[in-house]
Image (cartoon, rainbow, N blue to C red):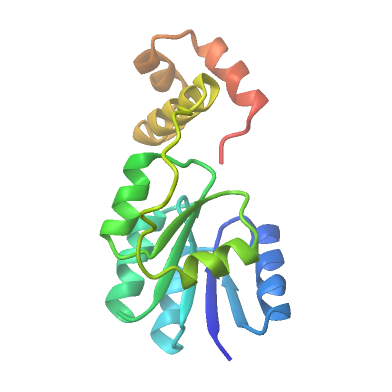
Length: 174
């Protein structure tokens, strides 16, 4: 039975993925923080791991690196609701075998684990990110840089604090 570690600070999502993997014959363990993931990986061996890119207090990229230091043969898929080219590249450089945007189901994740090498027949699309997604990614990145200080984030983005607050009310900060 393959063992999988699911690391996501979104507790309902982690539990749902865990149950879905169990139905597919995996022995699934779920944790909701970087610290819990590292502690568990020090005690138990896993074949696969699913790591959320943004954990509460740490980057999922740090988690990828530490997990692979502990278990070099571990296959890791990074999941994120904030997909960007730079984080995808960094995840792969650090040793993740694949990078998927949320929402991703267990079947998509299993396919990602099974892909060994890159796919040279992958279609190259001309579809750029939407302006709305680019704006949201920029806001999130700047919020992170300012340690979630709304006033400083607004100043750096050149917008009024109330405008930023309205945008954040539409999509809550993760």
